[in-house]
Length: 590
Image (cartoon, rainbow, N blue to C red; front, side, top):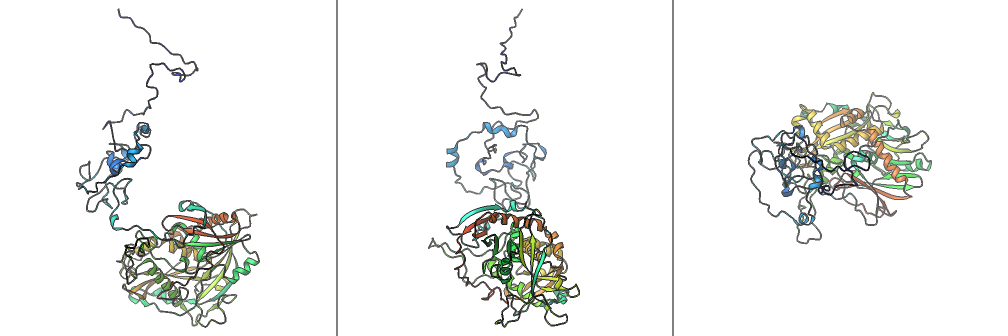
């Protein structure tokens, strides 16, 4: 009869269940080896996978994407629906092999393009397994191939191939709107995704003073169609775009301690719509005592209108030659292109000003309306006639509690009034006039816009949707300016070149009328988010000592930065650049 002997039992002196951590038997020689949990439903397809992405976020070797490495496309392996990960798959990093020297010194030299079979590697037919990241026919990663390993929308995964025709796109690097001096010290850096989460509800403003004269809007422009187009005329009128610190009315209000922050609607709308901006901009901020003045630079980004800023492939300026490389030739052509970003911006500014001058009735009836005080910028030595423009100085309360005294004084502008809609002196029937422009639907930077002459009357919705996508920031700023001014209507004209190759002659194809609040809903513009951004920037500046500061939008990243600059900055600059249309100043380019 065979004998049976019991093994040695090691009691747990700690009084707990299982073996003691302090008294392990000597035969437990594998106690320091890490353990990876597994599930009974797991299927072993391979015992080693050198191309797998480890839990330490290392890139796979040889540039293979994760969808190509794992059968089924998803992180869960073959046969798993919706990319459900395997049980314990996130703990395998303990078995990963690290060799920093080999990884850092390795570089792939072979750039030979391999031919990809139809359907992609490691699969048959069009699709992959049920694992999720399959093959996409749209925006494939290889020209002419059917479906590289890409996500929906065409963006290649980490380590995968590039998107559709990426090799034809140059690096979209832009220059900053203002040169950053080494003497400046950066105080704060805020990403746009943080700005988009801010929110502050603000009550209706208090009206202080009104200045200027308003003409009635010509309602015949609402009946223009593509078949009855009207040429855009050159109207010689004076309209001022004075910065905050040079406004005599704001200086008087600041002397009376009317508010804490002083600015204009153009500057304020740019700050409130900052998360939508792509092109660089800058705001000069001066703190004097307990007051803040938000200013713009003459000839800066706030003096012109952008074109297709939010398009997938916006208009670009030619890249200047590298001054450090004498052998490099300049990419700037001898004859400047009319479809560059700068040229289109000046053309859009010219169109906006002249359309606003043209779309009003200067001869009664209906008669012009004089606001409470005359235009504060028009001196007795001026001889040119004034444009239709009314300035409304309004105060908004940014206080979070009732005891907090934080107010902002804004100079807002309206362009005309609508007859029969009430008294404009009381803020009734006020109108703002803006213009969208078409340059060439087939040119680079058009953003896939349809031809207005053929689609504007029959498919206006498609035209408006394209403009809302390509010019989201510009339309949002116009809407915010109209809401700040308390305008009842926005008039938006659709103006195109008479000839796509001639930027000097334009025709008015149509005009639409919309209420600013409704348009803000369509654009998903939140005034509460804008006021939250303004309050956040104000709080940052109120923590700083007296001095001059600059808020700069990064030219290539969705980031704004706050710099402390010397008090003499921007005061000795000679802004004599030719910023107007065809050699004229943008404020009087008419």
